[in-house]
Amino acid sequence: MKRILLPAGGAILATGLLAAGLAGTAQADDKVASDALAASQAKAAEVLDFWTKSNNAALKQASAYYWDDKAVKKIVSKGGYSPDGKPGSTAPIGEEKKTVSKTHNVNLPRTIGKVFFEGRDGNLYWCSGTSIQSNYRNLVATAGHCVYDVAGNDEVVSRWVFVPGYYQGKTPYGIYVGKQAFTHYDFDVYEDFDRDYAFVTVYNGIGGSLNKPKQVTKAEFDAYKGDKDVKQTQVSFEEYKKGKLDPKTTEYYSVDPGSRAQKVGPDYPGAVVEKKEVSKSEWWRAPVGKANGAKYGEPETVQVTKSEYLAYRGPGEKNKDRAGNYTITRYYVQQWYKPGTEFKFLRTDFYIIVHEVRDVGRLGDVVGGQGFAWNQPTGKYVRTFGYPYAKHPDGSKPYSGNTPKWCYGKTGAKTTQVPSLKIEEHVSLKCAVTGGYNGAPWLFKYSNAKRLGYVNGVTSVLYDTDGNDRWDYMSSPYFDGETAAVYNAAKNVWSGQITPMPK
Image (cartoon, rainbow, N blue to C red; front, side):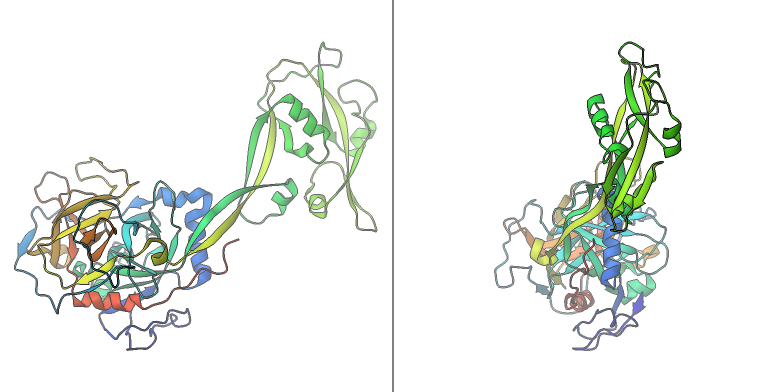
C-alpha cells in the first residue's frame, strides 16, 4: 500500500488512482493510507465472476481468517486511555436527526456480513464486517488485516468483496465488490495493530441469478465461448427411440457404454433394432433387408441453421447451395439387440452459464449503515456481531461459520498490550469466539428496535488468557481522532456501479 496525502477539498493524489475515478473530498491527514482493491469496473466484474461462478463455489470454499497471540497467557494491562480530542459520533443511516435508543438486545443487524478475499498465498478467506454510514452509502468497516496482507508482508489482498447477510452460499442482499481501502499509515507501513482497522468503499451491489445454467441446443453449446456444462439423464427406451428417429435431436441421445445390452440377430424373439449413423460409402456398401449392418431406411436430408451446419461433426454429408441454404444428410444402418437385457438410454442436455443479474443499488440503501463513534470512554457496554468458525487452540470447534453470533459486555477500562504485534492501546472484551470473527463491529448504544448503533471498535486479535487453550478474550484498537480521520477520508469517496454488467 502507498501513502497518500488528502488535500482539503481536493482529489486523492496517488499514481494511477485519479485516472481510475477514485477522487474524494476528504480533509488532509498524513495518517491516512489508501489503495485500490478493484480500481476499474472491468476489474470489479472479474472479481464478481470469480466469487459467483459455479453457484458461488469460491464463497463456500473460503476459510476463516484471524490473528491470535498464543504467547500471551495473560493480557498485560496498565494505565488508561487518553483520548486525543472530544468524543464524537456520526449517526447511523436513517437516524441522522433522531434520538438513539438505549435499548440493548440480540436482534441481528442487517448491516453485518462476511468479507471475502484472496490472500497472497492463493488461499480464500473471510472476515466479518459491517456497512457503516457514509456520504455515498457505500462503506464497509472491518479489521485492517482483512484488507492488508500482514502475513505476506505485502500490499492489499485480492478479490475483496462484502456479502451482507451471508448464509451457506446465499447472498440475500447482493455482493459488493471493494473499490478502495483506507487504513491508518502506521498499520500500512509498520503493521502496528494499534491501528488495525479499515474502511472500504464498495461498488453498487449485484444481485439476481449469477452464473445461472441455461439449456441450449448442441450448436449453441458448441458456439458459446464462455463457461458451459453437460448433463446426462437416463430416459426410457420410448423417449430414446423417438429422439433417435428425429434428425434434429439424434445427437442428444445415446446408450450408456457401460450397459450390457446383448447384440443379437433380427430373428431373435422380440429383438429391437436401433439405427447407427455411418458414412455415405458405408451405407452404399450395406445390404438391403433385415440384418445387422443392413441399411436403415433411406438417407435423411434436413435443412439446418448455419450454426448447426458448422457444429456438425458426424460421418454424414454437409451441403450449402447457391441460395445459402444449409443441409445435412445422414446415413444409417441397423443394429439389433436382445430385449430385457441391461440397457441404459441417455439424453444429453447442454448448458451455457449466463448472468441474469441486476444492480441492487448502494449498500447503505439496501441494508442501512451503522453510525461511527470515536474518543468514547471505555468501561461501556457494547454488542459485537460476527461469523466465528475456526477451531480453538485445543481443537474444539463450536461454531459453523454459517450464521452470525454475538457478544455483550463492558469494554476493558485499561490498555491491552501485545509487544509482538506492537499493541499498546487495545480495548479488551470478554468473548469466547473463534477465528472468522475478526473484523466484527463493536456497536456502542445498540438499539433493538432499530438494529442500529455506533461502530466504536472492530475485533482485531483473539486471546487465551487463562491457559486452557480456548480463546476467551478479544481486543480492538481504541477509536480516537486518528481513526476518525481515516473514516472521514473514506466516507467522502464515491464508488459507482459495475458497468458494463457481466453477460
